[in-house]
Length: 163
Figure 1 (cartoon, one colour):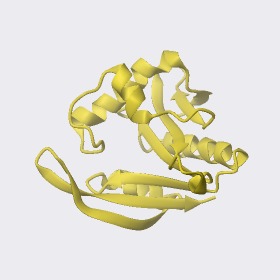
Figure 2: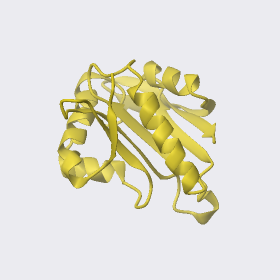
Figure 3: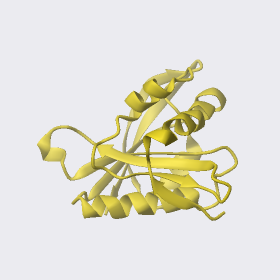
């Protein structure tokens, strides 16, 4: 599926929140268990000013997914590390869109002097863990049983990629 990657704009937020809310309602991929408003979505994503953030649009203009980097920590010692978030629209997984978004984010990270990307993933989200591992991320640790969603306990899995 061919997509165009574009920088995230304020006009994208409603569609991005819609994709996120799909996962809230139909999967265990998010830590949030109730749908969020656009304003709450923006706060959850805590967009990092100056950090890369992209939407993927298909030929008809619909949103196929989004990805962003944000500071891993506000502490200066971690200035070379960023945290990754990426979600794809229903029906858009397995088509190379996530890889295209990740590659664009990695390129933008390197331009900023970022050399480490961290992803925190629910252990219940096996597809995301597999995606990251297949693209050079390495599992660096877990917080065992720290979360609970829909009555199921889960680990937070820390995945890291050195650029």
